[in-house]
Amino acid sequence: MEQRILLIEDNPDITRVVQYELEQAGYRVIAAPDGITGLTSARENSPDLVILDLGLPDFDGAEIARRLRKTSSVPIIILTAMDAVDRKVNLLEAGADDYMTKPFHPEELVARVKVQLRHQQHGEVISIGALEIHPQKRLCHYNGHEVRLSPKEFDLLTFLARQPGRVYSRQEIEREVWNGELPSNSNVVDVHMANMRAKLRDLDGYGIIRTVRGIGYALKTP
Image 1 (tube, rainbow, N blue to C red):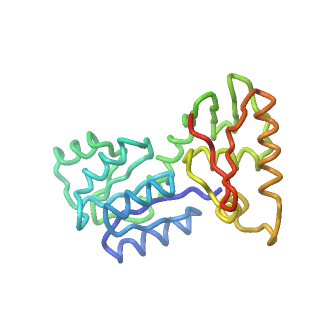
Image 2: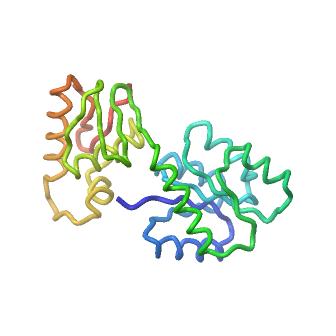
């Protein structure tokens, strides 16, 4: 699956350049022009990394970073025009993982994005009740027992687990996990869901995957 980068930046010229460079590097970019839209996008899209401008029209970027940190450990790279040491220290204390001073080279920003994502993936563990997923190692355990999933089953379960409780339509799942390459009226998603349910049920994992009739699927929260 493509890694998602949330870019919270109100300058359309910077947004255009950064989005182009990141997409050329293989990332999917979600752009937000202000803090409120950025927070909403973070909640709805579960990005793998956030690039956050400090001078937003509605909120100070440091405040947005603090709000993101209340519910997420997603890496945050701050873009700032301020070069004072104490300001940079305050940004790191607010939850930023890295910062870049404007003007900056887009190539360097992409390099820093790669570093942060590499650090994040190396030790990332998604825990939901008795379910534990290690995305980097591509391992899944339930109640301490390994769940032997196919590659696509693992991608699918990880996708649902990044935002437990949220209901995803079949179209969203097809787009994210199969890159929108499934034929119309395909039942591949349903088959994979049934297979995962059976494997989890063998480990007493009943009802973990929830079907919402007429809409799609969700991972049940503890």
